[in-house]
Amino acid sequence: MKAAKWKMMVVFLDYDGTLSLIVDDRDHAFMFDEMRAAVRKVAKYFPTTVRWQRCKQPGHTQRCKQ
Image 1 (cartoon, one colour):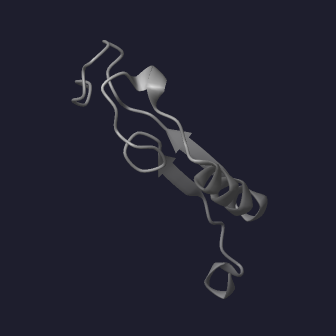
Image 2 (tube, helix red, strand yellow; image 1 turned 30 degrees about the vertical axis):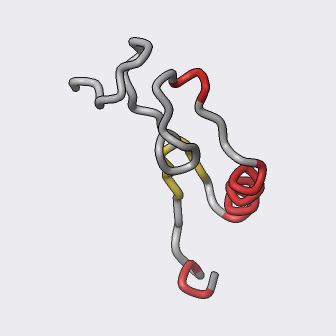
């Protein structure tokens, strides 16, 4: 927290494979309760966003083309 003093800190988190395990069907990717609590704790102090960048096709585990 001392390093953040007087700075505008923003936290960007990746959901799939970072906050949750990678699974074949993205609708079955869930955060563990401990991870959810950690994200809530960080969000109390810093603007926080969670990204998800996997393609929407079921079973498709590669990143989407931009």
